[in-house]
Every structure is written in structure tokens, then in C-alpha cells.
Length: 332
Image 1 (cartoon, rainbow, N blue to C red):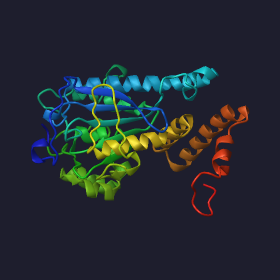
Image 2 (cartoon, helix red, strand yellow; image 1 turned 180 degrees about the vertical axis):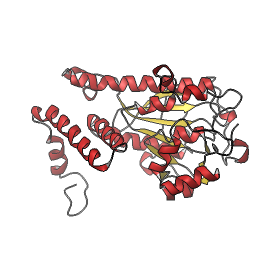
Image 3 (cartoon, rainbow, N blue to C red; image 1 turned 45 degrees about the vertical axis):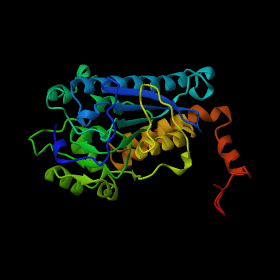
Image 4 (cartoon, rainbow, N blue to C red; image 1 turned 180 degrees about the horizontal axis):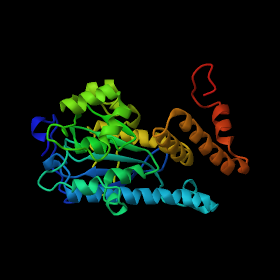
């Protein structure tokens, strides 16, 4: 198991009894009443190292999620008010996707007893992209939150970088061992890591092949949040997730991811998807073209929604609500 034997997680849990190599389930978020889809690698006895079966199963699950979310926008474009996901046209529409792993680790890289074919995973041919989990993640129109813990190594590192937001706990350890073993990244690590942190720090991580602990990962901006306790706002909230996924009360990163997913779900779902699109597309062009793309998306959005006369009503109600707690001297 690539890199796994050199690091030891600090938490132990009994192995999962579910035989599915990847678990996928939904749970209802308490405030927004929308859904979070939780996708979890289920090989805790192997530190969630992925083999060919795991790789292909992840790709299929992420493809299915992407296709469902595409339907939301198709329904809106059709002008069918009964199909708008916020109107009940879909059963608990997806607010966010949460990617995690069962047991003490997120993913310790490839299982070298049966690794995915690197030539296929590096290919841009459509029939191979269908089996590429990070490509399928890139098609998902809602935020993907990575709930990380323990090992996040090499291929697992690449899977984590497919997420929009990364939340970790103090056990989280990153490591890129591609150069150590003469392997080439094929899921975007050489590009995505330097976009998240400075190119120099990305080179330190990748060229040294040394482990990066959670505290430093947070300081460098690789982790967006570092949590060591359950979110206070959840209180004694218990989440019931389908698909055999258990939400443990000490899985702080997952609990925080669920809290954040609920916050996202409370907002305008169409604008969340369009905002994500603007941010993602802008990251791949220069600043001027990114601003142009934002204007194009804004124009298309307002041409679509202004005509109903209710575009700014939600903001007006929010601002004038006298019963809502607010900061002194602020309309928000």
C-alpha cells in the first residue's frame, strides 16, 4: 500500500461490516431540508486504498450525481414551475456532496495489488474518462466537500484535490509520493496543488515526498478548515444516512461538512451552482477573461430571472426583518 506503512493514524474504529467497496447515501439536512450525498470509500482494513473496482465505482457514483444535478438545470430551462427543485419537483434536491472514507483514513493511495490502469486513467478518450473518478467529480454542479482524516496519500491526495472545499481533523496527513516511486500523477495533482497553495510550497510537498501534517496544511491553505470538535450548532443532532454510512459523533470533519452543506442548502440553489461554475471556469483563464466570464454568466442569469419580478424580494425581506439578530449598524 503506497506510502501507508510509514504513517500511523491516531484513531481506531472497528472495521465496517458492509462489503461494498464504496458507500453512497443521502441524508436530510435539518435546516435547509435539502439533501447531502455522502460518498465514502469502504476499505478501512486497507486504509481505503483504491483498486480498479473502487476507482470505477467512484467514477460511476460521481457520474450519477452529476447527471442528476444536470436535470435540475434542464427542468428550470424548460420553464416548468412544477419541476424546480426548490418547489418540490425533486425529492430533497442535493445541496452538496461530501467525500470521505470509512475508518481512520480518507485514502492512502493505490492498492498496488490491483491498481487502476494508469494509461486509461491518463487518457482523454471519452470511454476512459467515463471511468475516471476525478473527471466525473469535475462534472458535479454543486459544491463537493472533502471530509478528511488520517492518510491522504498520493492518489488519495489527488482525489481530495477534486473537492471544492477541504475540511480535516488533527489526524489528517498529506503526502505525495509520486517522485519517490517514479510514478506520474494523472488526476491533476501537479496543477491543482499549486492552485491551492503557492507553487513553491507545492514543489516542496511533491519534490520531497515528505508528509505534511494537518496544522501545516491548514497554515498553507491546503486545508480550508481544521476542526477538533463537533460543531456547536449541531448540538445533539443525529444524522441518519442511507447506504450503510454511519455518522460517528467523533468524526469532526464529517460533522462540520454536514453543517456547511446545510448552510449551502439554505441559499438559492440555482445561484450556488452558477457561482461555482464562475469560480471553477475563472480559475482556468487569466483574470480579465475570468471577469468577462462572470459578466456573461451574470447577464444570462438576470435575463432569465428578472422578468418574474421577484428577483430581489428575498434580499428585501431579509434586510427588513426586524426579528432577525444582526450586527450593530449593518443591514445584514
